Length: 209
Image (cartoon, rainbow, N blue to C red; front, side, top):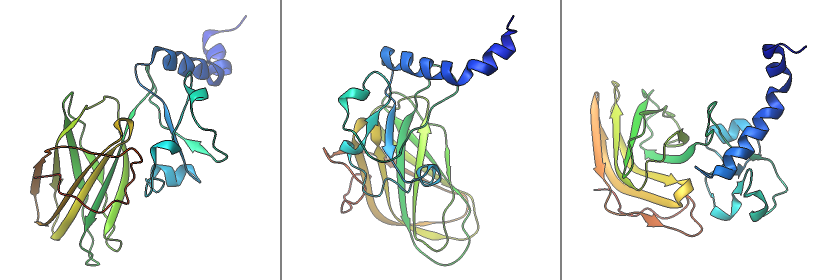
């Protein structure tokens, strides 16, 4: 006789696959998977430098509608139903000084909800930081972006780009703004830049004000 704990342990991996597929039938949200060479690079956001919508595959009921890819595909899920998450790519360009920066915190507000604050650790050498973030709720159409910085070394933020992957929308800001200790920045979005083949290699526009 199977004890419930033993049964769950023995079948959890297979049952979770069934739960994922069932959730995809309900279509509360989609399960987009993205091509990437490794899970590590996927989590670090390195697979979205030239992301295109046609590169996506969907897990579950909609899988047959997607183009086949001869490479690894990765996606993120939650531990609870409906399991799916919403993916956002944030690209920040800033001045290089060789000094150590504390983390930035980014918060997105949309027409449906406000995301949690996302911690983004800046690299002192690169001058750009690309981060894949997820949220359990669809924030809707982007309305505003807030940045919070708590640190001692000041620097310039040159531009911020937000790619809402599930909506195929890119929001871009172009400016030079000095960021200081305990600094708070707020931008209200005027409109989205829509791209059928959206990727983060575009020339910078002026979407944030």
